[in-house]
Length: 298
Image 1: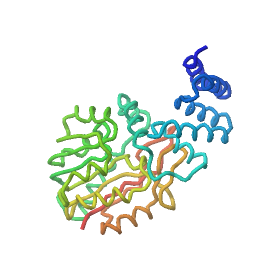
Image 2: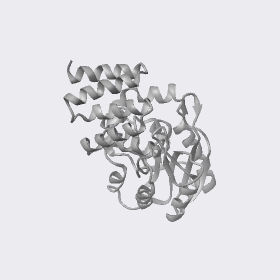
Image 3: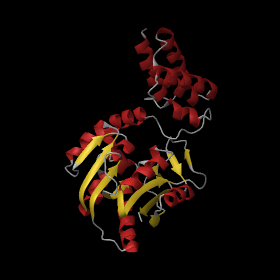
Image 4: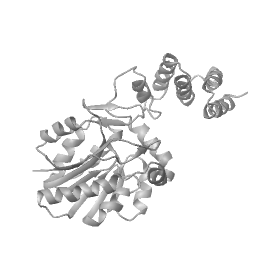
């Protein structure tokens, strides 16, 4: 039997919950093709699910050696297993490939299966922030970070003169462009995209359900502070952590504490104009603790 056939049978066994059999089949496949990163990653999954964390760690470490770009996200699995500290961010290749594969079913999955309501909650928080700061609820230039398929622009675009979007995944970018809601959309890393804007040239920056895929937010906050005009707003959602700074959770999504966000805001001289401690999505039918913040530039 070929390595490919063993790999396919292993995936089928894993889907049926027989992870020990899957691990055995994957080892057979790797005896034939020892340099196959997808099989090493699947072996790590099978070993983790079958109660062999040490074996899973070894398999994920081998995956990292064979996948230097990190497209499988093995570093995140190692962090979840306690083999290393939570990385400051996932590999760009992992996020890009994940959401390219996810693009076609992204909106249906979020809205219908995860009861996603992040853009609506964020819009309401922006409304309150405008009331508190006394600024008009209208924005000349807005940037949608991690724009996905354009859900945030659908909710917020009417109050903006133009909206520019950025996302790592080309598949998401294609769908966002097709909405006609954006002046331009690019496939790029968020900080690199912001570097293309002049200082104090943007009125609103939004990031809806984006920071769950980014741990250390300070470098990005610094770029947002550079491009925001005086009185501009930075509005975003996070998955809440009770304390600490940021942490990679069992679901491989980052959580951020209110204290950490307050410290980052203070370093840029921003005030918290409005906040909403609401869940913006569900996981297995249970609301996930969330926080929407709107920060106002001085």
